[in-house]
Image 1 (cartoon, rainbow, N blue to C red):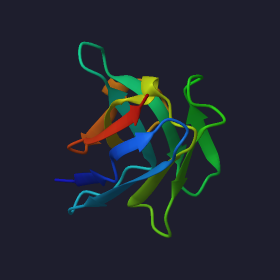
Image 2: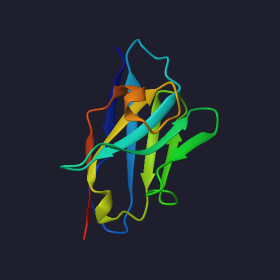
Image 3: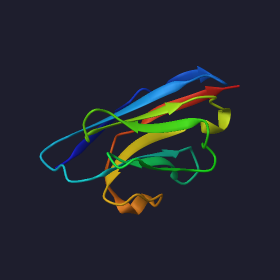
Image 4: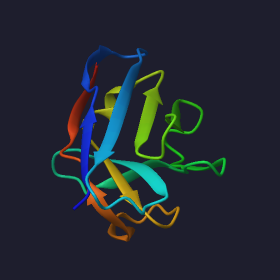
Length: 122
């Protein structure tokens, strides 16, 4: 079964930057889309960004356009989320996910990371 590990979260000052990483492993490796979601306490999980690796296709939530950038590594089993100009509203647990379709719908993704906490102070 495919496993995802997401790392890179932390506490940063408002306006600062963070870079999240996601690495997939395991014998199941057929997904073409890497995505990022986030969930704050008491709120539903929301879509952040996604990319179809190798196709130059990306999808961003309106709330992060122009601030966050999703990219892939040199292999289809890695993904990054570079976050600039972080705001307190970005505070959440961030999860990477893999799926087949480039979509903002969480139920369309079949593999998930364990989550990494991102906190934008002040």
